[in-house]
Length: 249
Ligand SMILES: [Cu+2]
Image 1 (spheres, helix red, strand yellow):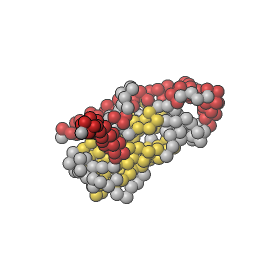
Image 2 (tube, helix red, strand yellow):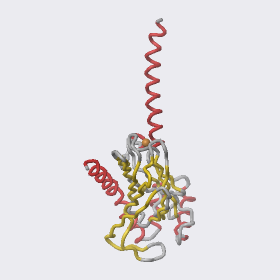
Image 3 (tube, helix red, strand yellow):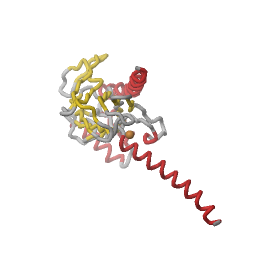
Image 4 (cartoon, helix red, strand yellow):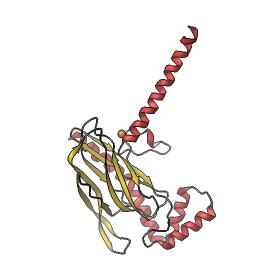
């Protein structure tokens, strides 16, 4: 009997701890998440956003995906179950696309509206084609507002320094830009630079080699990337503000 008395509480405690871990893992798997076809800097990538559940049981009616400023152009994939709309905003200063054409506005948001609300317990995906910036090591955050028949969820939280994104209740989907693979559109020279640095630096971490790659780009590109990356934090906050103001309505 004494054995049981001491063992049972201990077992109970560890089982409870396991339960918490399992619940967290399950929730993370069902969040709104993004899966890129490639993360290579400068490459065209298809970003697949997955919706794993509704808003506390309520069917999903629309998804508003905010685009980071580092990605000025977006080609949304048509999904037969959803209407899609691009929301644009004027750029403060025009930029050049990969073909040298001037761009004066960017897609700030892509909105998918379900033709039939997506029931809780069923998943669907929507996909966006983008060109990733030449910014290896940088995080690109895509705050998403999931609107449901009842309520909504703002997938807008980003991890603070040193915080694990998995601990967040409603994390914003994000990707980390990887090293260039040399198949970027019209960026062959930069790719060679990056490869050479990778070889000489050995197992340097991503952030360091990313900074070197940006330096190697030459002044204009590097400056543009710094400006664009600085905008990401503000955008995530904008997404939070949007989610909050919509909750009030
Ligand atoms: Cu979830």
